[in-house]
Every structure is written in structure tokens, then in C-alpha cells.
Image (cartoon, rainbow, N blue to C red; front, side, top):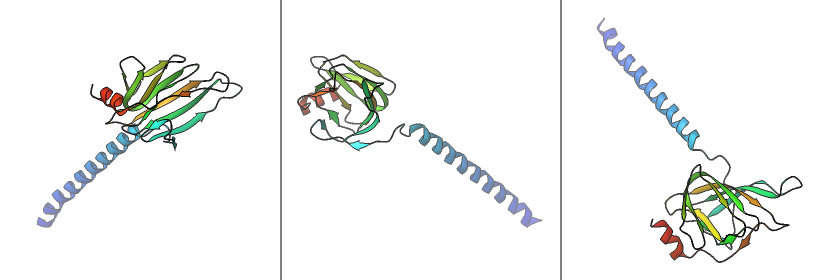
Length: 166
């Protein structure tokens, strides 16, 4: 009888611990699923138009139905575009992280998940991640003829660091 009375509490403890571990594992899996990227990172973008590590996952090319392209851009912390314009504008939909969009001569706009930015045609601007977070956005870029972007000079470290101080 003594052995049974000693085994029962041990057996109960094992069941309680197993259940707790399984619950923690399920909670971790759910949290991981909620933070998983919507789209793959894609291919690294060239350094002649970007500073730092930025990646593009193309989603839709301009075709007979659409006068725009659609892609998901991932900026690792510190990565950003060079200054540029779009002949017929661009829309950004932020899906993850934090960063900035800045029009020439204006204060930078902080970007976070859920933000939508409408960039007017021929407006000189840049966008990218903050120094402490990656930024992921879907870009809808309109075409004028065969042109959808005009690349300009890099965003200087001074310009970028000034934005990150705020």
C-alpha cells in the first residue's frame, strides 16, 4: 500500500508537467506562426540602388491587364533605398517591422505594420528599415510607358542617422 501512495503523487506530477510542457509548446508554435513572414524574402537587391541588405520577392509583373508591378521588399536593419522617383507614383503597404519614408525637403514618416503610403508621381523620396528593426513592405509601382523608377543619389549616412535619432 505504501508503494502505491508514493507512486500516485509522482504519476500526477508527471502528467501535470507533461501537460504544461505541451501547452507551452503549442503557445510557442502559435506565436511563431503569427510572426512568420507572409511572403518569402526573395533575391538580394543590387547595391547600386540600395544601401545595406535589401531583398525583393516579385509578385506580379506589368502585363496587358496591369500597368503596375507588385513586389514584396525586405530591408534588414539599416538598409534603405537611394533617393528616387516614380513617374506615375507608388503605394507601399507595410507588413512587418519598422522603418521610414521621407520625401525630399520634408520630415521623415515613421512606418510600421499596417501603414499604407501613397507616394505621388515624380516625388523624390527614399524608404527603408530603422537601425533596430527590419522593414517589410509590399510595393505597388505604376509605369509610365516602360519606366517605373528613376534612381538618384544614395541617402547619406548623415541623412539616415538624423531620421533614426527621432
